[in-house]
Length: 141
Image 1 (tube, rainbow, N blue to C red):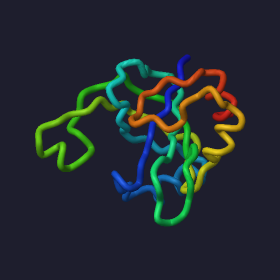
Image 2: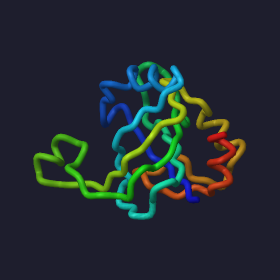
Image 3: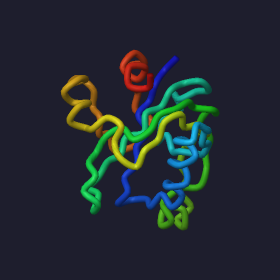
Image 4: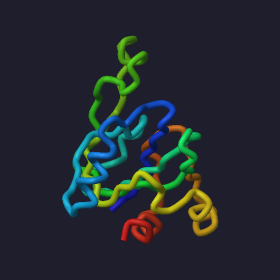
């Protein structure tokens, strides 16, 4: 099993149904969706993902892992998530995912990640960055 950092920057993409997704996951059900895996074709069915919230949020909520779960499909090419790039005909690789944990606030803050796992680059520019599976399992479980 492999593990990957998927990223979300609220200043670049507004997640309009996030509150609904959080409520579904916190009620004990899973929430499935699609998420970009950047340019990486490495994520595969059964791999773990950690969703890292990036950027500066006007609400003052900091960076950190806000969700985790399983990858349900191999990467496939889809229309770009950014409207401007989509209108320019650009595409992106994406996987189906299933959240097992999700919060609107970091489950593990960026500062804690840096303290505990100093050798990992937690703020990649795009999704699909590999992270050691044993580290993801510590965070996931």
